[in-house]
Image 1 (tube, rainbow, N blue to C red):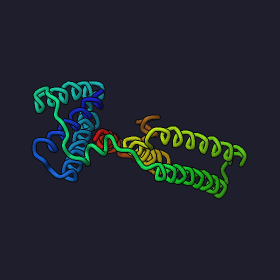
Image 2 (image 1 turned 120 degrees about the horizontal axis):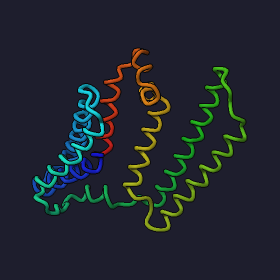
Image 3 (image 1 turned 120 degrees about the vertical axis):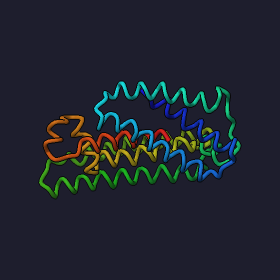
Image 4 (image 1 turned 90 degrees about the vertical axis):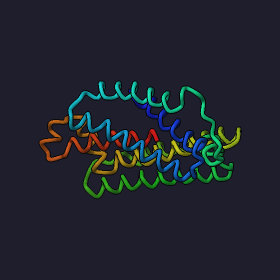
Length: 217
């Protein structure tokens, strides 16, 4: 419930650091990312270690962060002066770079697909028919081509879309290819069985809240 309020608060802080204090963009972005992680960990600590229901914690955060934002901005709009921050929110990638990016994404998907097949074969697990994976790759290729072509018809791929795709890729890999990601799924499936398996459930929960704060930043 507090994600939107956290986004607003962090965005307001970034604007104030840029417009009021004229700090370098690297300092602004680094500070906001650190603050986002700390806010997430703060929420996670209440849920994981103090055992306050996440509904209550996130509702309280929603109200508190909105109030803090109104307090530090005095309810007024804070403009941005830094060309770097404006670029992050409004710039577009050159069309050639967008095409290259689409090709790279497809190649990565193909490599992951065949690497997964090889791994399952090596461990004697069931493997989907080759035509099925090939069909999936064809569908993915068509979707990527349509996505890049549609955006190139305007001005190219927006930088915020690129940032979103990078976040999607990183966290998809984390969720499906790492022990940490598997433990998150395990906690969601059966928290008590996961705890009895020796997993530090509290630390994982708190880490997930911290990652949420990072993504808000």
